[in-house]
Length: 281
Image 1 (cartoon, rainbow, N blue to C red):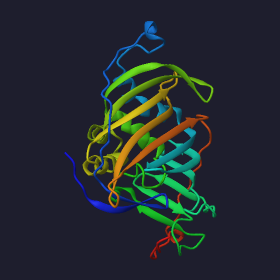
Image 2: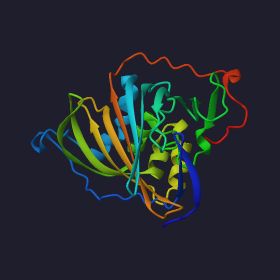
Image 3: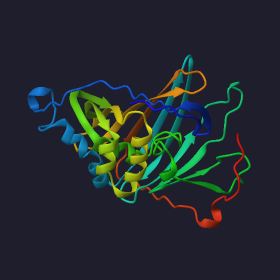
């Protein structure tokens, strides 16, 4: 079923006109069990392995993270990058998000500092007219995409919990990510199932994405280390541009490394949050 609703969406400070006819194209892949004879695949069903990936991150405690959100429409390609740390037990993260140059390619925009918390996204250097020392707070429960793309970076733990909705998956083979040996899985997740199985804080956002997107199916590639921890995960989305009726391909990639690193994330107090109107940039 396809639903079309034209709107302008701001993604990491970049306005994209989308008619949310979100056709998340996916390739059907079968489930495959694995053992030592299949090139290093772990014993058991890949679907179950992926369902447990988010729990492995909680066991690890914390990590550094790099994110990339790439949007492409026609001949235009925009990439928004982020880097920071995440505490999987407290569900708190801090990212510095780098926006692309302005359309003329002349100016480098100030990076946005983002604090990720259960049910909330805090941003500094976000929005014209906001004082430099103030934060903008967004209730992620109000975002129709569940903050999978709006902030310009997917929350690393939300990205992991999308895998709780894995419906089908196959072991692709052994490879390396940033020098670490990993197992590569390819599959399709269902956002409705992910919302049901997610932690309390992420059920609402993932449920909103499941109901707003034209399809709840999300194709992915996930790379897990020998402890079952996600080292890299790539989700693929596709929106339809409401003005040109041309597809906007969105690929969200999250890279996790340096597990156990200190991740002291402090949220702003009420007096540090900007309560005024945010002007269009």
